[in-house]
Length: 331
Image 1 (cartoon, rainbow, N blue to C red):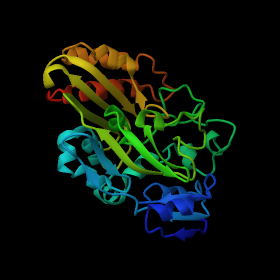
Image 2: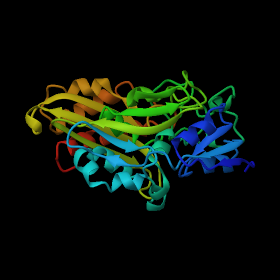
Image 3: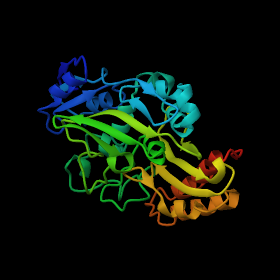
Image 4: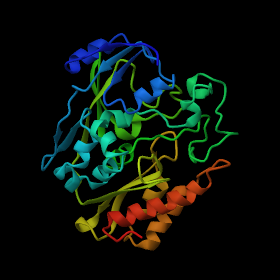
C-alpha cells in the first residue's frame, strides 16, 4: 500500500484538529480498520495521513427514559453483548451480532460500520475506473451484478453494506457529528446519500467531520426485529437485511398504529419502504398481512440482469422480520 503518516490522537479534540485541513481522501480516520485497510491494500484508498479515532466516545448508556447513547468507538461486540440494549433495542443488537466474525466484531466500531464503503467488486478493483472513482460508467450495468441494487435507478448501482443502519433508521435514531464548525445531529434516515447527491461518498459528512455518537429514543409500545439473509453464514455481507419497528396499540399483540420498515443491501442507501409501512398501519399482523407488506415493499423494485432473485429474497426477509417482531416463530 502507499506510505502514509499516522496521527495518534489521544481524544476527540485532537482527532478533529488532525482532520481540520482534510480534503477528500487525503486524511482519513482509522478505528478498527476492518474496511479501510482493505481499501488501502487494493489501492482504492490512498490517504496521505491516517488519524487514530479509537479514543472517540465508546460508552453505551441506556436509561429507562430518554435517549440511549452509543459512542462511535464502541465495538460491535459491545453492542451485541449489551444486555440493556438487547432488551430495549433487539433489532439493533441482532444486527450487530450478525456482522462478520467474532474477531471482526471485536475491533469493528459503530462509526466504522455506518461509514464503511460499498462492497461492489468494480469499486474495490483498482483495474476498474468506475463512476464512484471518477470514471464514466457503472460497470455493473452490463457486468456481473448479482449483488447490486434493485432500487434507486442508478446511475451507480452499489448497495449500502451497513448492518446497523437499517435498525437505527427503524428506531428513528439520530447520528451526532462533530467538526470544525461544532456539533450537529442528523436523522439516521437522512444521513446517507444517493450517488447522484454524493458520488464520492455515501453520507452527508464533510472530510473534516467525524461521527461521535448515535442517540436513539426510547421506544414506546414498539415491537422490532431485524432479519438478514447472507450467501453464507460465516463472515459475509448480507444479500438483504430487513428491519422493522411496529408501534402497537395496547403495548403489543394488537393493531399496528405506525410502522417503520427499512431494507438494507438493496439500494445505494438503506431503503425505507413507505408502501410497506402504509400496508401495515391499522392492521392486526398475521402471515397474510406480513406477505402483503412484503409485496408492497418490493412492488417498485427494478432488478438488473443478474439479481432478480433478490426481489423474492427481500420479500421473504421482510415477512420474517415482521413476524419476528410480533414474537411469532419464524419459518
